Image 1 (tube, rainbow, N blue to C red):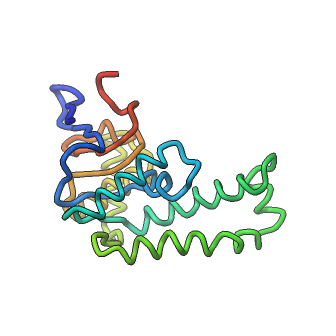
Image 2: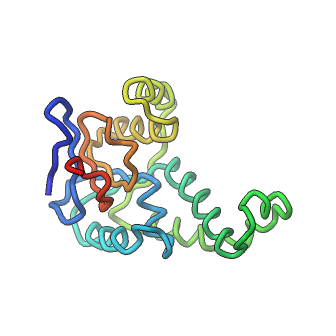
Length: 185
């Protein structure tokens, strides 16, 4: 179902059961949710990922999204294994602890790189300057502003996310399973 946020803006929120676009940008929240079994939207994101795998949709993942997802996944995995201790406490006490998780991060990355329907892309040298405009225009935090600038660099208008931070952005289509992004709520 396509839902327009308002008559004043051209931002559309689209649920995971809707028709798929020809191209789609993944933000890190989607990667985190399909990669971490305890993530809030894990099953929905895994199911949507399977739909993408069986479609003609080309997915774009930036190296920025991988970096951001690795960091959050590393935090989640360490918190799972060291309950009661903060991530920073564990890492500061023993920086080598991250070695225990690299194989899992590498497996997630290898699966993304090996997928013939996924293109891993880099951010261009001017992308950070465009991101500053996105921060100014849409009040985005730096990472989200960089994701949007990367989307625009590759002329993408469709985004998959579970993150509400992109709602103020004009002229994009947001695929999500997060009901909090539904403008009628």
